[in-house]
Length: 272
Ligand SMILES: NC(=O)c1ccc[n+]([C@@H]2O[C@H](COP(=O)([O-])OP(=O)(O)OC[C@H]3O[C@@H](n4cnc5c(N)ncnc54)[C@H](OP(=O)(O)O)[C@@H]3O)[C@@H](O)[C@H]2O)c1
Image (cartoon, rainbow, N blue to C red; front, top):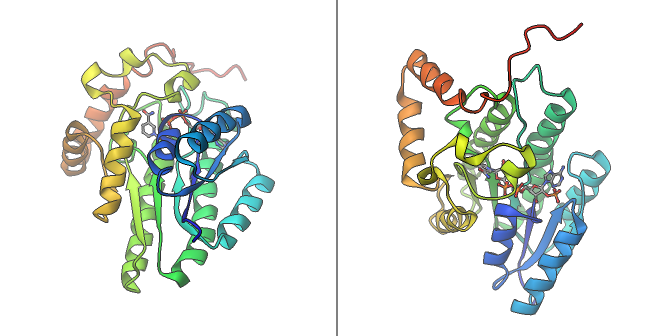
């Protein structure tokens, strides 16, 4: 009997690669990211360890043609059991000072790609009444700060999107599970790509391993939890911030962003 298939975007490093390692024993995998060599390495490791079928699909999900062919695949894959929309990245600096291209790419990746792949996957899974979607959002959906404008906005979109799906699936008494995974600071390549210093962002107690994040997500999936915020500190923070009066929340968010923007001097004149 053929095994169920899990598709993971952003599988070449960090949280996505750990999802692949945790799920390889029980599922076949479709691993998606741009870096082919990294996907190949992981696929070799997992096929040797688990005799699982691992297919790699090098793709840039912010590019229409790549996204289109992947969405078609999601819609047609007969054994698709779980889609993990995990690919993502952050940018540094104030919104208007950061290059527009990076901001647009982030919206294409966090919003358009997640939306298109989810649409395709649900058209496949809802009629079969099996499966699930994990959307990797962030605690930034609840706690924003200067320097994360597009990031927090797109991750907030992701939690709202997942909540909407939850309501619609509940409305038809579906067996499908949807989850918005909202990690806080996590050791991965994320902050290296952004070239930001980890210790300046938060103390060691606030940093979690990608394994801790993925294990919390998979436990949440078994319990059919809509929101998974790994780590008690982040659950507390998200809970407090969602209850604070707006002015207090903004003051706390502004204070939190100071460290993030410390090495990004304000450019009031843009040289035009
Ligand atoms: N690390 C944190 O502190 C943290 C906190 C909260 C939420 N998150 C979220 O967790 C998710 C995973 O991030 P991570 O921490 O594991 O960081 P990471 O190690 O940098 O992994 C990001 C993954 O996304 C892929 N990716 C980026 N742009 C892509 C594109 N255009 N097309 C296809 N794949 C792309 C990267 O692969 P390629 O470069 O090979 O394409 C990589 O596999 C992201 O959505 C991030 O926003 C991270």
